[in-house]
Length: 495
Image 1 (cartoon, helix red, strand yellow):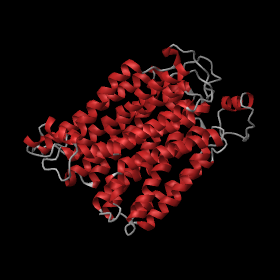
Image 2: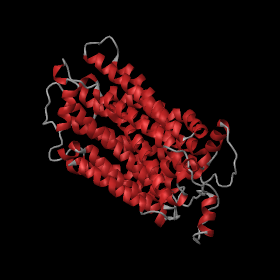
Image 3: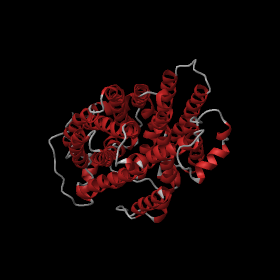
Image 4: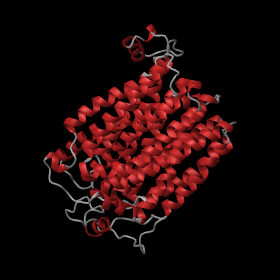
């Protein structure tokens, strides 16, 4: 049933893509861009599966990976991910998104194989190694390669989508994240259930095939290493597809280039060096403000997505078991709704300004986290509803900020660096919440929503500061082509 829902959702997303063509691209261009994006997007979704499978392994391993251990592994990995963008962002700007995505898929696959090998060794009595330290090092390696994927997908987008279409792209970007989280949590949990020596749930035909294909019944322990091995194989498959189908820009696919009217539109053919790329980002007050919004979204996104999954497994949710059982699917559905809501608001209501929908969603999260603080632990249904609605809002913010605003204000020539710095702040926030909540929830789960409330308020504040901001080339396009009057502000407003 879940696969049918996912399939229908994919069809709807594809339909919305083909029905949104404000620049009147040719049918051939629309189809080629779709093929390009399908390959790129599925690779990115499976990168998410190879990232959040750590959460599934934590629940599967039980006391072998405590909440503090999990918080440390994920926290250090996300901090490495955030800092990696200072290197990988400029590198992708220089070499292009196609090569960057291949680096991401192959590197993450290798790191997941190593993590699976460590789990295999540990569960077969190899207790001489420190599981936490070893997994922290390997997960950090995984996250380093993952950082190539995040900037590569936006780098390719910057050449294929006009600014007036990028709100839709933000929605597609949010959809890809949502599909990836579904793969990680629901497919990952299905793998974990299938490879138990003595399954505790009724297995599907696919799960039974996995058990027989890998001779799980003949083993001596639960084969949880497949939580890492299977995503690794899927990434290699999609890397091969990318090698044949993925094109960096319309020119590489035998189309004429077009001006997307972003921040690079007035720069001619200049080629920025790495130092110049970094200087450009760190001296831009608007991009720094976007980075601040994304820092708070990193705290909120993983503060809900990771920890509700752990909380609901640890504290029985009487009457609200549905949320844990279908957590991946629910994240997928609500994340897609959030991405499209924010994208449509941005392009159709706010003239492709990205600040207003981000501010609206952030303010909504202030309300939701406050309700969560009251609902825990006596109102599990209310808590579950608030948690899943938080995902809708925070993926909306993330898709319009990292997926769209960073490319608008960084410009296509510096998209990798700009989106890298912005997305790096997301994961610095993720690292902060992971280590903090790993410690706080070990004392009391009541601290969980209370920790999140101030970050939702800060996100609202920073998003409001860029409410009227647009790149100059976008303003010019809106005035001359679409005849839209633009509200002028006195100057860029930073954090």
